[in-house]
Amino acid sequence: MTDQSTYVPPKVWTPPAASGGTFANINRPVAGPTHEAGLPVGKHPLQLYSLGTPNGVKVTIMLEELIALGYVQAEYDAWLIRINEGAQFSSGFVEINPNSKIPALVDRSGPQPVRVFESGSILVYLAEKFGAFLPKEGVARAETMNWLFWQMGSAPFVGGGFGHFYAYAPEKLQYPIDRYAMETKRQLDVLDRQLAEHPYVAGSDYTIADMAIWPWYGGMVRGELYEAGEFLAVHEYKHVRRWADEIAARPAVIRGCKVNRVRGKPEEQVAERHDAADLD
Image (tube, rainbow, N blue to C red; front, side):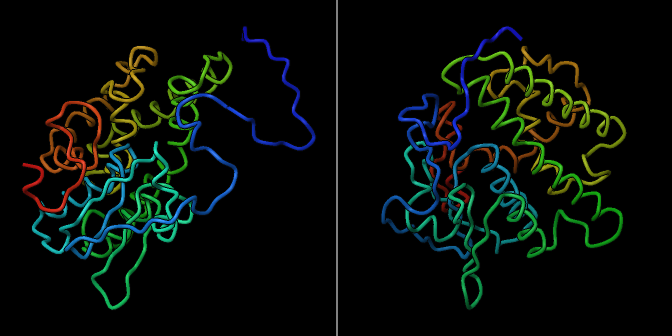
């Protein structure tokens, strides 16, 4: 390590006047809404409030996969939440997700609306609601849940750790970049070893585990996340790349990746989705 620091933590931490870096303008040490604003409600029972980030894409892929299987009840409205502008701190959004993170879902198909937040919870909820992409019992279900929760626990090191210090921090610091690059590569190796023996992450079938893991680790090996492919030598993970490319070619994945997307090629961006034709 070559970085030098003279920072000495105070006895009681207080937020800095300006922290710098991407998203610094919306960071704060308290929860709750910052402003009063309701959320729109469309015509479908399923209302999604999200953004086309790796976490948001998990759910739109799941919904498009369900629709591709013929589940017409999985039709949904997807509303754009611009997190860089603080839309996730509106009173309406906080009512759905008190943690103010996308994605958030409201299921209005029953007598009482059901709120579902956290991407993993939404994937399980939809899988159980429609009986798809999650084995019902036994070893196959346990393995799918193992890898789903592996992603939930591992991705923060990739996003909030490596991604933050490599791509978003106001200055490049060697220690945190080294620390999180090492952990990201270790995780890629975990996944590569699993995919060397199985076509999909949890075994022989495509499941919500793949949908959860692909936007993060598939995006990494395909060079779409943080533009860090060369830095992390992602070509080393040939089994992850095989799996990532196969999933990227799925029609429902292609469609799901367009939803709530506000970056990249214009033809790949569908800020809001209310009908299947919006993606055509």
